[in-house]
Length: 369
Length: 133
Image (cartoon, rainbow over all chains, first blue to last red; front, side, top):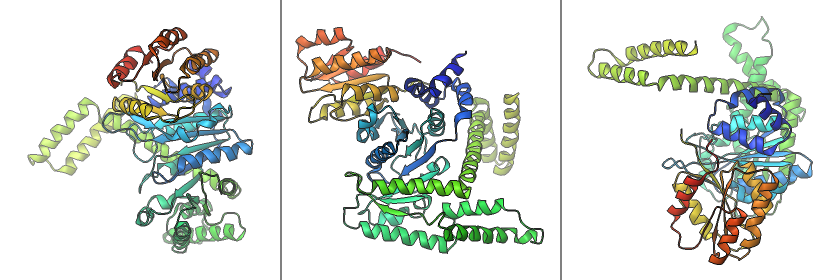
């Protein structure tokens, strides 16, 4: 058996060192990992992937620790991928999420891995998606992704998780308002942590109001986006004029959403309160997370969500490859030359861009063959 | 690309504060390393399991309580039991000079006592990693 197949076999057999080592290979972009990942692919897609996100200091790690305990009570094997930022200056990082969870280190059914962002924006590290797949293949039932402390637009976790828990805390005042536009749209389950603090009820009310308004307005929250894609799945009758297809699908999305709502299959995202420090509310939170998963499966949304996410990831990976062609020395000097031509008015920006795109395509084809 | 060094910083035993460990963690971070900080009151079992899951290149432990002669060798023993032989293990804290030879014999690569400049620890790690790839 070759090294890649052997590594895959060890990961499948639950060998913690092999799993940890493979994640390191992913982190440093080691090309020899690919054969192993290809082999493991057959065993992926089984785990429930849970994203936990929210602003810095909202208690994500403490909450994750308690969620792990609750899932362990339910006899689930749990993996955690916790992401913290790297320094943009030195590349170093302090990965401190583990402090809150290290008591699970001696539980053989729990695997915790800290990842540094290593320059990646969006709230995750570049290695996250592959690391999650490895843990999925390794047989963990639930995989929790704890993002970096997010601000407004670090929403990459949407592309990986089946269920997203958005953690808020009281006392952030206008900050809650501020993050409404980006991060607040991605939650499947909302959790107001540190609920023993003043103002928790107000935050709950604000989030509920935000969600209700979003649905009434037909705004494109993640919720309604998914209904729209579900509608796109349903065949459009021939009698519907092509120019009204969009409108038809919008109506269908609404209809499907309402049906699910009426059947109690998939309600508006729940808003719960927790005190992670003491564990209060965590059981209900885990119930809500699991109910969301059940809803995704029974409505068929899980498959749609995963397919959309994978399509996005494919596009992203392709863009990365093209970017690497663009960063070749040859291309760089071509860009410098084109820039001079634009500045000296020998050509204009858009002609230069077209020319660059053509040379890029040629280089890409040459590299592939 | 240069390999990013991952260091697990841990406080085994019952010490009540971790300022020294945090100073080291900061210094290693500023030297471009990734520091997995596990905090206070860790058992040797927790430290070793965490180091394996994190695929750490280095375990750096700090002790002030005087339990180093028991806890440091225990970590090395557990690593050996699990067949891990490529992790550099270093120690620091309030450790009498007389104890250092015994700790080194047990497999602690180096012991850094109060007053050691952080650069000495950083250089030691860079020059003594057990695995290159």
